[in-house]
Length: 153
Image 1 (cartoon, helix red, strand yellow):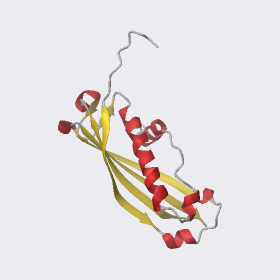
Image 2 (tube, rainbow, N blue to C red):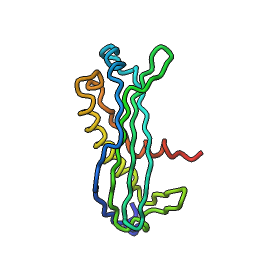
Image 3 (cartoon, rainbow, N blue to C red):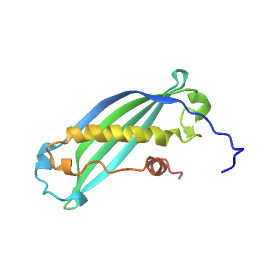
Image 4 (tube, rainbow, N blue to C red):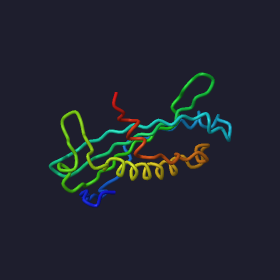
């Protein structure tokens, strides 16, 4: 690593976590045989909402467990959360326009990791007593998830 390369100090903190939506098809879950993790596909969604004048970045995260069986796909669980982060000097660390956010300092994977851990904990509580209690949200690399969700086309 080049010792002359300057590093940017980033100050951030989690301000608030809120569950914004939850759906679970308990009837469908009760019909699934145990030990069938291959029946579930997991999908993620992410939306960023910057409030630059307040140094706030809201990260809205959604996860869906999709049951894939007999050539059909059905949503069995969906959880949505909103995570508010204060990021000092947000306007200097990210380029933000009406339609695009450019993360010049790899902040988004960091806060996404926090949001995923929080979402995982909420999901564990919400799915306790169901077959999904045996299939917690897998460990996800936030950098890879960001790359796959925002891949340049």
